[in-house]
Amino acid sequence: MQKEIINKVANSGLINLDLAEYYPKGERVIYDLKQNLWQEFVLKEKDFRLFVKENDWSVYEGKYVALLNSADAIIPSWAYMVLTNALEPFALDVICGNLDALESVIFSKSLEKNFNPNDYADQRVIIKGCGEIPIHNSAYAKAVNLLKPVVKSLMYGEACSAVPVYKKGK
Image (tube, rainbow, N blue to C red; front, side):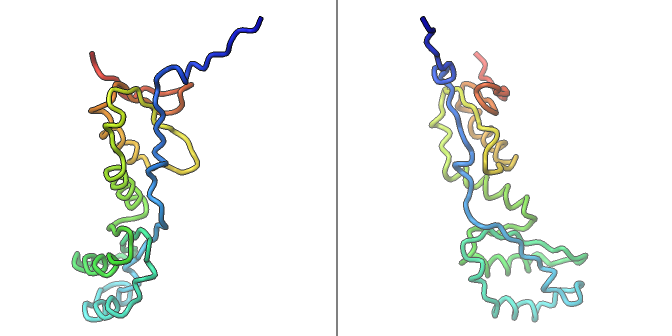
């Protein structure tokens, strides 16, 4: 007589959470202000404002945009503001920084907007570790910040090899 196979993971009461479900879809692009500098050194306000006015910003429709300056020049803050204003009607989001900073900001915003930590109240939660979509480390940190106040315990990885992150005291 064969023993019945028991799925201990299914019976454990653990809830699996895949942050990839909250991954913001959309192309990520960089806009480098270096292209607007005169001799890669100075931003001329009159020329810059004319460029911003005449440029077709619709090419950024549905994209996430990171504004940065790769030249060794000081860009005034208002220039980032003017570009953000021009991009805002088209881009999904605009930040100042590189692609890594962009990924961090937009994933955090997505979690704040779309994730309800109260759905996991008093539960034992495992945040999935590996998947097809690369999850930015800041998203894991944001998930801990959102979940810690409500969950019973929080782990990372897979049920067979979860790494404990947090356990509520008794």
